[in-house]
Length: 101
Image (cartoon, rainbow, N blue to C red; front, side, top):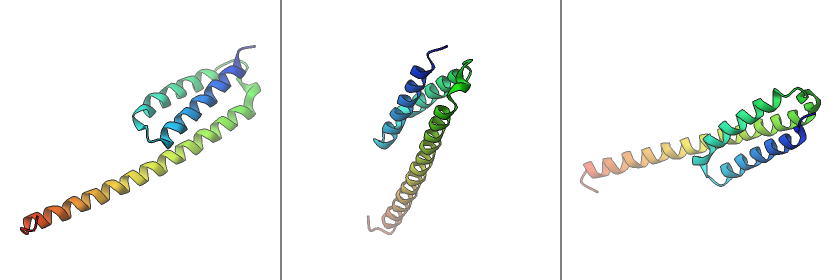
């Protein structure tokens, strides 16, 4: 028997931390956190007794899928803001060229 239950708790805590950083717009930390979580998840799934924890693994996977969806929504919002900023910049440039800026 391995320390699988403790590792599952660590994986859940890691995913909770990722979600918290996402919610608080601490995006710089996310790539390293996601890489670390991915490596730990792969290690856990390679354990000899990991199959005994299928329900917990499914719950963790569902949480991860929900987190990915939140990341996609966040990305879409950010892309929308970038588009708005570009439009505003083009309008300001047009005003400047017309001698109004």
